[in-house]
Image (cartoon, rainbow, N blue to C red; front, top):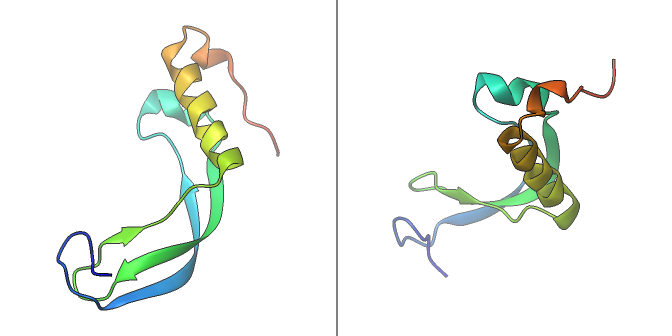
Length: 80
């Protein structure tokens, strides 16, 4: 199996810890989604891919839906 971007076969699976957050000022009210996943990385071109688990994917869907609603500004972050 080769890289989807460059076609070379210099691929490595690595463990990754990622934070997914929405990229605009409106998104600041949406809590980030934390992901600890295996990432497939091409060591030639740097292309990487991962599969987001269902629970975290649902959190991203809910965040997107909240941004689309007029009440997005009323959502509060959880935690300290």
